Length: 423
Image 1 (cartoon, rainbow, N blue to C red):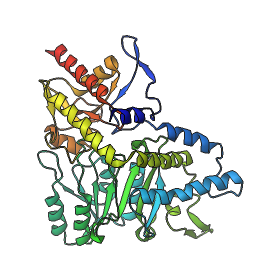
Image 2: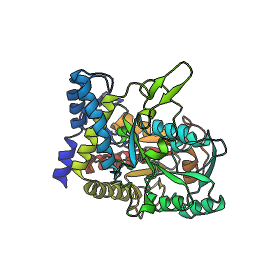
Image 3: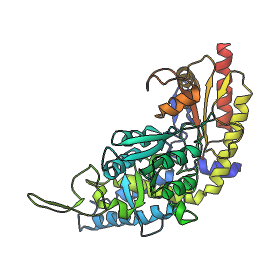
Image 4: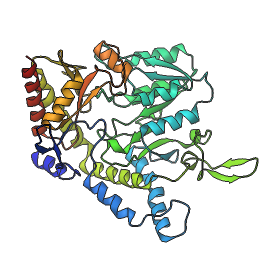
């Protein structure tokens, strides 16, 4: 395993770039904030630089560079469909800037009336809550005392609304606790009651393989949205993979060139998806980077990623449990249904103080606060979130496939140091 980890660490761009600490020492960052943004693969950076040498306008020119770029851009949709297990003519791929952009485009297109009803959950990132609640009626499935989604709540809400719920919108994995939801069971429930399922894939896409077609037709995922910056590619790439027949019936509230067949003085004829959802000049470097990141993740293999991630998580939890004053959230005994995310606190020490100390004294990067999931964090901490920049919330450690035991040992040592300073 050590040789594999070292091989992967060598694939990460900027891993050894030094930063300055409060005492003016310079040292590379120990980056444990991968749930927010991952560093890019070297292969991704190299591919972007390579393709920029042949960069031209997408879909609008007949020059060689334009045709080269357009070919990569168009063929990339097939690669993405295969990546998420949606290799069928029923699906199309829409390029987006990120998951938030994708979910907002879907919400602006699919919601037809303020009286439409969407079922979502109290586990969601704001990106899979606010676009819906601002446009229509929303109902929420709850989480249990451990923070896991209550599947029974989804059933009860679907049953209670007698087929009136149009979409069930759920995260595949929580950005706070790392819990992986059974999206296939949820899809089956949604379809039984005449709803479509929309999955926020931001936190799952670099950790687990996805198969949108499911093992049975009832388990099919209708829409899956993800970001490239969570999967080792920069520049704001992302995608919606969704049912073309549904997307063609709607249009997002986002207009411009590239999405029209013809514009007359008093009439506009729009083209079908995916182009109708991609007005304006596309983020070609973002697409190039995302496609290379997909290829690289598949080369590493999701079986290895899951096993190694579980190892890192259990090692970290075991170490934190040995330190008096550490408060862990969620189920830290059974972690099989979690990606590599660990939220915790130190008793009587605000999480922002802990995060600042780790960064300024040890170059350890973590996240603190409520992680754009305020209702969920409130339920886990039993404290109301006061604001994005207010004290409170949690500290979040999140792993990448390049993190190693030395990173974890440095974290545990630094946490122990903070506790000793406060004792």
